[in-house]
Amino acid sequence: MAGGLFANEFRVDAPAPGEIMRRRARSHVGFLAGSGFVLLVVLLAVFAPWVSPSDPFTQDLDARLLDPIWGKGGDWAHPLGTDSLGRDYLTRILFGARISLTIGFGAAIISGVVGSTIGIVGGYFGGRVDAFVMYLINVKLALPGILIALSLVSVFGGSLVALIAILGFLFWDRFAVVTRSVTQQVRGQEFVAAAEAVGASHARIVTREILPNVMSHIIVIASLEMAIAILVEAVLSFLGLGIQPPTPSWGLLISEGRNFMFFKPWLITLPGLALFFLVIAINLMGDGIRDITVPEGRAR
Amino acid sequence: MGRFFVQRLAVAVLVAITVSVIGFALLRVSGDLAADLAGEDASPAEIAEIAALYGLDRPLHEQYLSWAANALGGDLGQSLFTNEPVMDLILERVGVTILLSLYSLVLALAIAIPLGVLAAIRANTSIDRAALGVAVFGQAIPNFWFGLILIYLFGVLLRWLPISGSSSFAHFILPTVALGTAVMPALMRLTRTGMLEVLEADFIRTARAKGLRPGAVFFKHALRNAILPVVSLSAVSLGFLLGGSVIVETVFALNGIGLLAYESILRSDFPVVQSILVFVSLAYIVLTLASDLINARLDPRIRLG
Image (cartoon, rainbow over all chains, first blue to last red; front, side, top):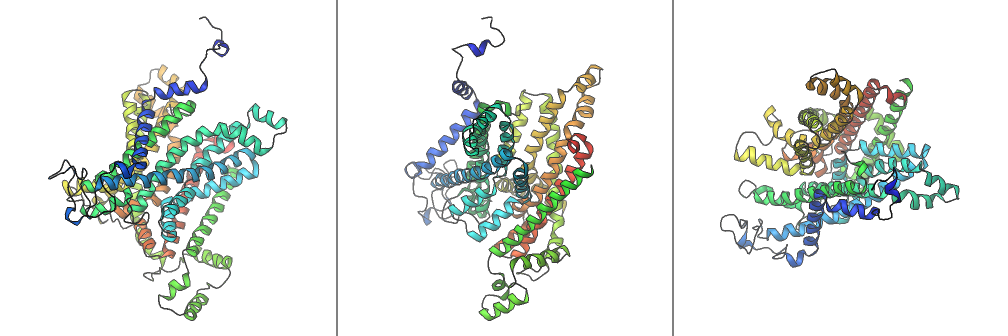
């Protein structure tokens, strides 16, 4: 078809934007692998009580520090062995996924709401408001995140809710930086001027015109921040200030296994690998969503 | 230059003041300082006496101002645990943290720059994808866990390197690898993106067209222009490393201010925690300010734009 310069725009059978994205998603290996693995972990976490071979808290002092199935005397009763109190390690790791995912989702949602609000307000109103937003971002960047998190957790305790709140309110800066600059770009577009001309309120313009255009960026950052929150929770729990025993958190499992790592290294390698693969999968998923929804934002 | 310099400096001072207020507030939300100072079995009257002695019964803004004035004069108060001046505790240990941060940054740059340049020159080939894989790996691997794995491999199985302490250069090798891995990916991605942009520029085509060797084109002409953002990020990373070394220092029992902060948090020694917090923040502010000013000097578009 010898179309003119704009041929594609006049074709009635041109694919809809949603269809284009679905096509991109289906051919994006990283996205498929990443989101597939994340989905698997989510399912395993949700159905942990049914899929795991035993209970995460039941101790069996006669069956302490058993080797996994590939080790000496491995037994299908405990496919990944047992920990120092005889608790089934596979079960502990499966239940640990619940903690990581809950904290990851919770913290990403809070930091997403906080950071995007700050960023959009700064980018939309500009001027002094924006100067204040930049000042807030600068203060946040200057504070050492891990140290603040450790201090706050030691003051407020390492409950699940406290951890989600602390991590959520600590890692909003990336949301603010990105939504601020995207909002600035969208703000200058004609459709925003048109909405202003017909007398739309600020609230309406922000929710109807700005937000839909910033949303894909927010989702991409949310996936990255989720991975970071999961890693920081693991660190806090590893250092003994996050999730408290006997709750199975991956960071805590690594910390508990540390005393035995010279003879039973799998006690630290297994939960570490779980953490590592979940974070890689979330990152691949996030990079994939970026390529699919905002391909111009790709680092080529 | 003058106006940009003054503006940037004013923001830095404002941020520094805010950070110090936050540090001060952290000490106050952490509990009743007078009760901590008085000891466990002090009577309410004794606690009130201590509060009056240290000025803890005065309004908060007065307390902040006198604390800030003392801090500016080099007096950061005393540790609740050892009763030593906090300044002495920090000065004793800050050298280890600075060394670890610098080693880690050097290691990260030594990997990030060649890898980033290579990935850009061979963009969209398997070399590029391998470099990206290294970045994804470095970003996802949990720092503390990587440290433990290194301890197991090189300290226990192979017995090549010491696994804890800070008395010799060898003690720094494993912590440097663990910490350097964390900051390398961002530096590598930035080098790659910068190189890709520069390689498309006209002056590179000219350089190629006049027959310069590819090595001269890439390293002399292109890298020099692509490196500017990498220099800024290095300064920012150094600030991050000073605060982020707490994990690696704890895993390797490396006696720097990160380990000091962790130990102080565990024993609720908040005057020390607060001082380290403010110290690390100020270091970050000074480093980013310096990198902004250097960039503005090198690139007139920033200071005039």
